[in-house]
Every structure is written in structure tokens, then in C-alpha cells.
Image 1 (cartoon, rainbow, N blue to C red):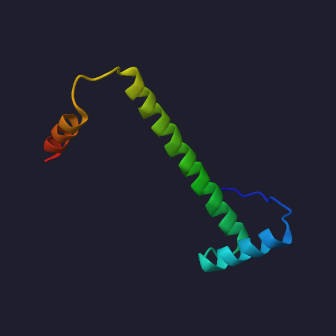
Image 2 (image 1 turned 45 degrees about the vertical axis):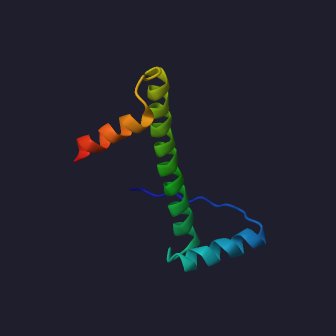
Amino acid sequence: MSTKSLNISLPEDLKTKAKQLAVEQNHGSVGRYIQYLLRREAEKDTERKKLEVLLQQGIDSGISDTEPKTYFNKLRSNLK
């Protein structure tokens, strides 16, 4: 993966906090810590989008006549 530089300005307190967290979480540097945060945010965004699709599918499927407890019991028994 090719890399590019990104320079950002932070208030002193955020810079200090970023350095502290990078060390505490063993990222090696503030740059690697920022990379980690960006990757984690991208993963969360992907998961949010998947959840939105699933929720919309549930909404679009209409109302079920099955009681939730019965439905989930059936799902559990199918997993066994």
C-alpha cells in the first residue's frame, strides 16, 4: 500500500493526549495511532451500513403473526 503524508494541527492538549494514547495502546507513534482510529472508524461505518440494510429488510418484511419469544426459540432450535 502506498502512503502519503498528512499534516494536521492540534491544540496542545489534544497533541499531548494523542501521544499518551499512542504509547498506552502500543501504537508506536501518533501517526500509527491515527491510522488505527481511521481504520476502526471505517470498520464501524461498514458495520453501521450493514445494520441499516438489515433493519430496512426487517421493516420491509412486514408484521409477523409469530410471537417474538416463539420466533427466537425456533431459531435457537434450528441452530442445534
